[in-house]
Picture 1 (cartoon, rainbow, N blue to C red):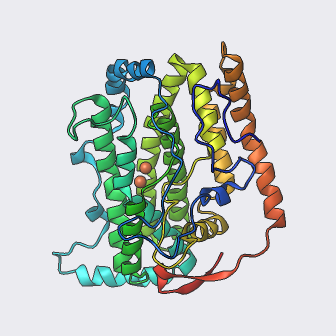
Picture 2 (picture 1 turned 30 degrees about the vertical axis):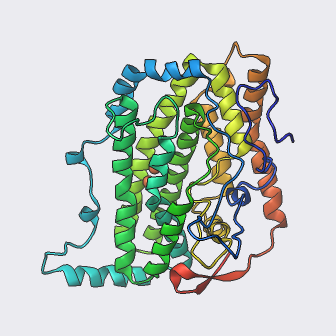
Picture 3 (picture 1 turned 90 degrees about the vertical axis):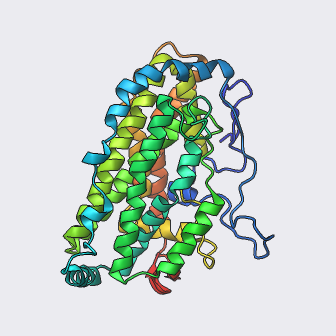
Length: 388
Ligand SMILES: [Fe+2]
Ligand SMILES: [Fe+2]
């Protein structure tokens, strides 16, 4: 499996240092750079990323995004919810000014007692991921042709990105406050993890290229929709209907965001199919790294791998989900039906259309070989131990 795209590819490969697709996606999610050097220079992040490709979008393609502004106004902004009609974290939390506040908190804590530690590991990992939102807004603003140039730019792309961020901001807020009230998790360790993670950033391999960027966000919004949907389902099974409602409400936002980002990519497939399918294949060859892949809590050098292993075992987010998302997107964008592609475009088309079954097969084989994981402590739950 070549790790590097052919020199003729319009997309310079940033695949060096990344895994080929053959490895388990869950392992790959935790792929790069998760060893923390014991001695760090002061003020450097705990995880550092090297070999990053920048500005791979050809200049003439930038104009496509300028010309799509009115399209985006009609097709994207209508997928946002007006603030006055939006839910807020407080809608799901005990009202601190009410006389019933203490009773409500007591009930919340009683319900949370029924929830196993391993579930909290997944929920905390999801919450930490949401809390690194500054990184994701930064990531969107790295994309050539669509970035918010001023912080208050009136372009449709910038309006979308700010409003998307503002909607997303409620997710971490709500999960964080809920988690605090349960009394089940070590908030200081969680807060340290968030600070470390934002300090490290992320490495999605999107090369300032909005084609790659919107493919990435399409995949990611669906991944978070699935993951929050599963934590909702589990919470219901444990009898915490309030928590189920919280996770389900967040999942619904992710679904709406998935709709928006997949619409952008659908449009790109319509106007520029060859380059878009090459971009899709490029992202899939590099693998979709999870947004919080650089997480660290000051203790566990392989925290993300460990969190991912628990999420896999509990069925919150699995290698099968990774393959399912890919297959969903291939179907959503009708990649099989693309015509008039270049030779390289056809090879990329073939690659993405046949990848999901190959990932599934490899994963099934890996699962069959897998031994039971170790039981390890998680600082997020006061070093109580959980099976990987
Ligand atoms: Fe979110
Ligand atoms: Fe999201």
